[in-house]
Length: 120
Image 1: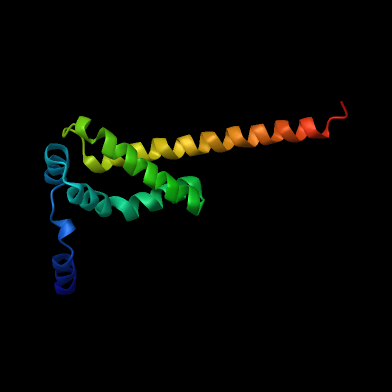
Image 2: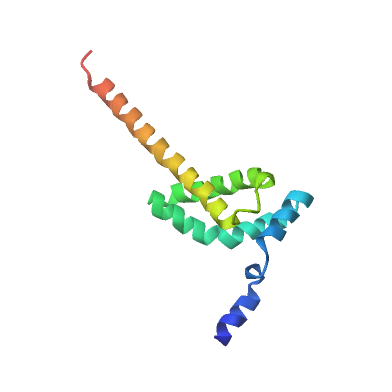
């Protein structure tokens, strides 16, 4: 138990309030606050995306897209929602976009192959 407390003391991001970080970024343009906010959730969100997408590179790209979309939408964030839930919702929707794109690409490839194989 004492060991966990010492580890938590070394990692101050566990004590930083999401709302304070959001306010710092939105009101003052503090990129360090946005970075701290994302570092706090990066590992868990990446694992979530990896479970959805089952592909490392797609998951890394989706993580970056999620953070980009979140930064853009952060001024519209409403504190009535938990930030983590809101972030994961954006990540979930981003992963669904990747899955849709995969299906579309697979269909396009199939049509292209059928066209190339046709004798006409």
